[in-house]
Length: 461
Ligand code: TTP
Ligand code: MG
Ligand code: MG
Figure 1: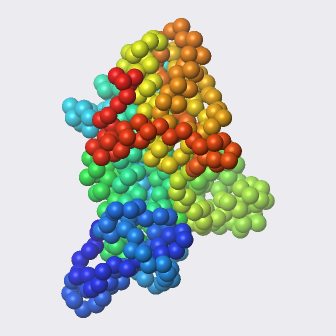
Figure 2: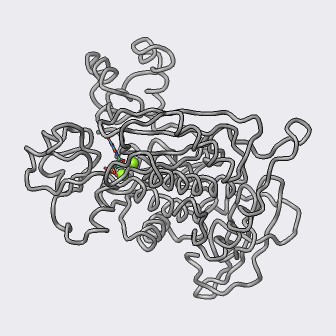
Figure 3: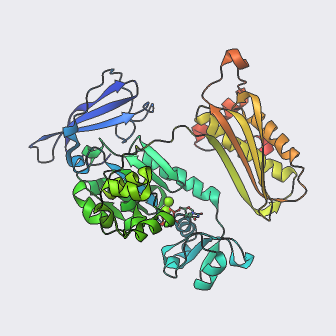
């Protein structure tokens, strides 16, 4: 926990309500002159067994009243208006991971994506050294090779990036129960009510950056602002390793000089229309009334642009608690034909997906297998089951039958397994009891204890 200077005057109190709870701690300041009350609002159930010392987690105390959260207690948070929103985005994410795993690449331009000798494909991303040569995401790899011939070119290793991404999100959920993932390397956090843990917004942002660095040895850029739109602009504005704070009083200075393209939802076409009406910067839009803008751009787009130009955006941070599907795929080092090796990969993918499904407390109705041939031709086949399941044996049987159905005649470059139509429980009256495999339960329990998947089924070997 951060900013825990001062002596606790009494144990933290936790107040409960159906959908969340508040913790309150009372501390003596370091100088001993004042008492500070730290408040924090949590949404959703507490995670059992975790102590109060970890932000974002709290052990149940059994009290069952909800005490109102006094807005006055947000301290410096009030400089951000009703809400304090944070945006976090990793710097040159795939490329940074590659340099982390290969220290010999440090200081050199690194481009992740296709390989130039393949003659096709695009740049996924590149590090900031390569960006100086004009290389950027989505650029054809052949063009990147011309701009920066001495760069290190690498194919993406998605499984590794996903593993690190999971670690980052674990760190973020320690800071706020309201974390909305936007992509593999990026999230919004609603930090409203958490301000009292930090002396300033800068300290709060620094705490998140440091925690990510400690967990991954990678840098992130962070923006803190009154809403999502401004927080994302802020985090993008000083990459890499940036930390930009926009209080309400900073917004105009920051926003007005920006080109209209900076407004969320304004693409090249909309920008062109605005420009042909003489509107180049956010300040130009500010000079017009909402009526003029709606006349120019239509009711909905005009209002949207007018609001953003005034720094207004009331979208909520929506935590991604309801995953729509769970899946995992592997790209092989060398292409693999159908046979025991491929089936073992399938079993490992199923085991990993099954474990995540059980951890999420869900049952799946639909199983999907995805294949990709060396020429990138990609196919999927799905089956929807009559009874939802989360049992590895059932999932493997279905996935294996789907793989059979492809009648593979060529080796595969990629294999993936997905489950979807997730539901929380199975209605016994409709489907009969869901089959719970005792072996799966035991294996999960042992692996949980050991902290990783040590015990595996024979088919995975
Ligand atoms: P971004 O966050 O857009 O980019 P980045 O993290 O590489 O660089 P920065 O944020 O510092 O500007 O995307 C995150 C990852 O997503 C990126 O590392 C690679 C992948 N990606 C693609 O594969 N293709 C793309 O076109 C983009 C934009 C990203
Ligand atoms: Mg990024
Ligand atoms: Mg991103």
